[in-house]
Amino acid sequence: MSSLLETKIAARQHALREQGLLRQRKVLGVDHALNTNASTSSPRFVFEGRAYVNFSSNDYLGLSRVPELVEALHLGAQTYGVGSGASPLVTGYSDAHLALERELCALTGHEAALLFCSGFSANTALMKTLFDQHDIVVADKLVHASIIDGLQDSGAQLKRFLHNSLESAERLLARHHSSALITESVFSMDGDCAPISELSALCRQHHAWLVVDDAHGFAVLDGYKKAEAAKLIDVQVVTFGKALGCQGAAVLGSQALIDFLVSNAREYIYSTALSPANAALALAATQYSTAHPELQQKLLENIALFKQLCREANVPLLGSDTAIQPLIIGDARQTLQVAEELRAAGIWVGAIRPPTVPVGSARLRITLTAAHAAEDIATCVAQLAQVLSRVVVPLVTERQAADDHR
Ligand SMILES: Cc1ncc(COP(=O)(O)O)c(C=O)c1O
Image (tube, rainbow, N blue to C red):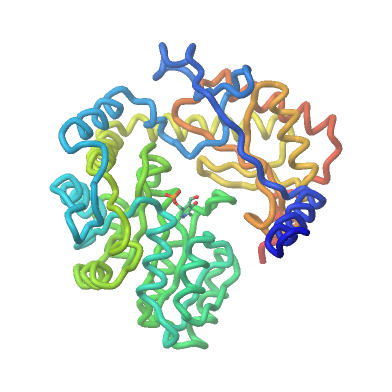
């Protein structure tokens, strides 16, 4: 007889399979042909013996393959060893960590920073340590799962406002005596940007902190970097695994907040620190991105090219101006089918299904990077147009998709 847990696992997996929502890992290999020419060709990998152009990574500036950064990680490991060896409050906090924290503060204008091994743990630690059952927290409907999980653990009352709607946010702030408003700078699945200046003004008016998950904006959106961020944002979470091309995250804010987290955040206190080699790498990547503004420019050019080609080919995008370009299909199975057909043509895009996105809004999440070559972007759009004309799908227009979020 099966145990209770075996029965539960089998039933849940069966249900997911039936709904087209089963998640499976794919083992990707290195395209060795690419590595000899790393900085001049589109990101590629090999899956089951075949090479694919990668239109689904968050390595927006293409930094993960930059030789200087490979060398920075190597040097970091030679200097400090490959691991931190302990949690930060024991012996896991080094001058490499401090140097990275200082650089992030200089860039954003915040007083202090605290490093985590991932953005997910930074968000959950921040939410569940900062808030408790006495707090009312207002958050955009589309904030990341790590924020929701942390808030749920915190016991705070959570009020969600309609995605990117200032009116809806203001209504909630006026109705509830809220401690904070939480949003993302660039929304991970829609690619649109939050109205940070306006939200900041609202928060000031209502004496609430503005907390921004800047995972997809940091190092690619300039508007509120460059020591300006702290003027608008009380707490900023930046991650190193997206535009910086490496790994880890930081919470940035006042010295008082960071001291409070050091003493109370369980994810920080009871977990092995980010390795100093990775801290040294993230520092080098931050400095590299600042010293090479042409990468941001190239990324913008690639986004513009992709959007223009899609317009010409009648491929209906969601209207994002960032590296994240969603194409809403609606049905989870059809989304998978379109992604698979694109794979047959050597193009790899993300197929995003519920619960990552709301039911009925399954989508292709196509991401552009500074490293993509124009001819690969053109091939991607041409294949996309062909597949969409072959596989009949109820495409949701920009307008409808925006309405569905409200
Ligand atoms: C908006 C947002 N916040 C946080 C995270 C988590 O960051 P990390 O990948 O470093 O854990 C992600 C990653 O998917 C994200 O998209």
